[in-house]
Length: 594
Image (cartoon, rainbow, N blue to C red):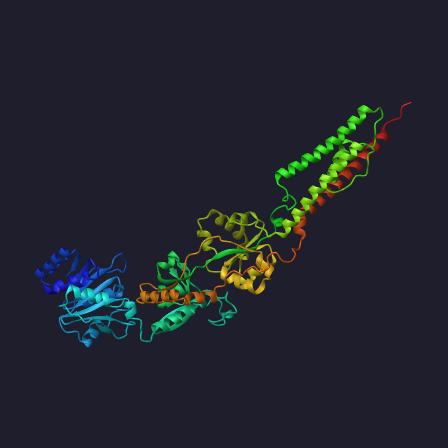
């Protein structure tokens, strides 16, 4: 009875209410355990056929208590299943009962073959002592720590022990210089110059960013990496991954020394234990001038101002025609110095364009109208010209959304990465899907560029490049002038997943590694590495300075009007010549009348 009371007190003081007992006790003793567990509020499952026990799983939402009586036969079957399925972990608190004293050699011989790694909660219970056991690595000797209590300890003593005992992460920080298999990524071996190469941050940025953090982790926990390199992060082929993720899936490596996207398919075959940074991807481009996306000659005035100007011009033309009619009614002879309707229209259009007229009528009232029209046109033209200059000098905000990119004539490019098409296809945004179908897919492989080539096209062409912002801004800082940096804009097409460090599924070091990387984040070491390797957007320090050069695209609408006018004049000239020739032929063919 004292043993049953101790077992229940042991687990209850750990706040465990679900227990599985692997025992071969007499029926009376087993019934007493069940009765006592029910009274204590512990849900108990008794397994007496140890050889044929059900499969164990690491999944679940609650911690569970596991009782194993080592005095029973076939206990090695239970331990083998638990070790093979990684149930010897933090979620399962194991209490191993043995009737002899806790001799270190006996504990070692009994548990040597099983993976009781640093995340395990396994206690060997002999009549006179409790011993916490774990290994730094499979096939390494067991580390045994006396807890200072025995089976005669009271519930109060157990509570005091759990309150004073440091966490497993704190107790097991020394991994005794073991070697763990690590795997990293070098996607461009020919251009890779070392893990500390700051000259080419855009090459394998995230392996370089993660490597010093993991090296510091190894120094902190006193272990070594047996490091290998691969060329790919890992893509699924019918559930089987290649690259780094593939090594973790096949359990050929313990941990990855690179930050990866936490994708759902990868989380099925590997675990992620620490987010390192938030990766931002965006279309980076130089904001085009307003004239590149709209007619700058129509932009200065609102519709109301255009309407008012047209009304003033029409009123002037009608007034000139009305004065001619009035002159004709008051005088017998027609004054040829006054405007006809077509001449009045020509004069008004010319005045709007700051052009004079070949005729100066002698009538004072007509001269006043002409003067007023020319003066009004001067004011309108001055405001119009000044507004155009202001538009050309002011930074444009023509492109603000993905829909603006789709509608614009701008060419689109994408950074050549393993996920270059995945997130476009998976995006729920209709505008992003439309951008991919209309701007990227028709280009085929020509749409994908390296960071250097893509940013070079951003600088020199009408081009938007979807890139990891830190890699893109690293090249921009090296190649762009200060004024070019001020014209940069960015539009985010999709939000990529979080970036974290991967390790093999159900690794025994996950809690330990996660705790120490969290410490690096809290004390600022991770921020230091982030500022070193991930380049932020360059500051604009040349805004409003210098002159804006004007190209053909800025005056293209005016050239189009000029060309259209030239074509119309040639067509009209040809028509007039043809009509004249036809008139002459008609005159020659008509017989004279006598």
